[in-house]
Length: 395
Image 1: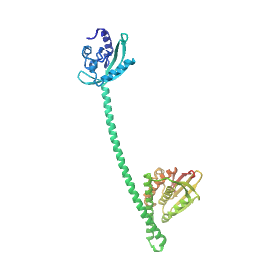
Image 2: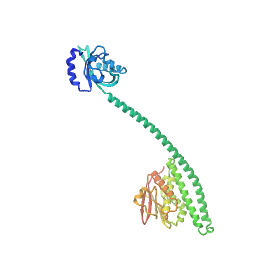
Image 3: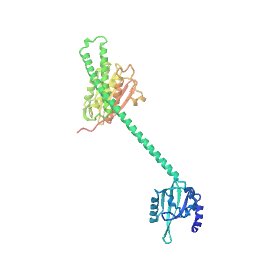
Image 4: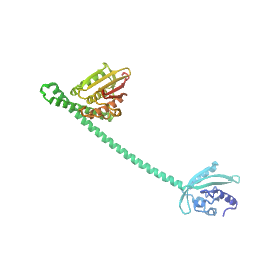
């Protein structure tokens, strides 16, 4: 039965909390949490009605999960000592032996001049929320585990790809090196035949020898570009700045390529300013100049014209190669360093060489913080213009 001195309180409180998912209570501050009042909401939460908690033997503390009892007691005692509100989350074992999670909020006040401490509060069932959180936590753990597993698989795949690329680049470098040596020997032999034995070569033999020379020269150039590309791709290409006599370097490269121009009867116009100096990487600059001229030779028609300009001012060095070949459309100009169409009546060399060369040109110019400009028209062919900013003097 409800204690007489709580009967009116019981009736009034029930009217306030009967529609709330939980129950209100008032209990003594003892180890058993002896109930002075508990609302009817305790039945759906605990499985026990109000009268159960007012009887002599059963106590609310016995319903609290054994693992949580000490924590509940200590936190409430701390709140009592500090005269403050408290909030708790703990488990109970219900009448049907199921476990529920409860959230409790309460406060304490004294009676009989502080001799008696009463705990009053409200308890609600949060089992559904806890279960949802546990499911979310389990899902997140599963997801995290799966992500870690995928990350490990992805890292291993990347490692395998890296190893495959390294193997490919190593093989390519070895092949390019061997071909480079072989084609260099073939070029020397073809040059010697054309220079020293012109009277011994009759009929179409001369054109055949020139074709052999051009093919060997193009293949040699391709090998050089493959070696440079492999070094650049693997990050093994050093950038070493030296003072370069650029005018002399341009003329040296032009001279080494005159045989290729002669084979196509290309008219060469040289407009190279004397005394141009530039602080840059010698190997990269040689590759840039060689590839730009090789590209011009490739796309110039037989009996075409190739114009080479070079000049400098206080701000920059400009190197330009104009060929009299096919026009490059405006839409294709951004992609010209990747591929360029080569009509059969214009180019006789291997298509891949100059295209790979232009890719290297683009990357090597970036090393020097420069840029490349492409101009093209139907009647004037195509111009590749390199702009390199002047670099500080070397000390």
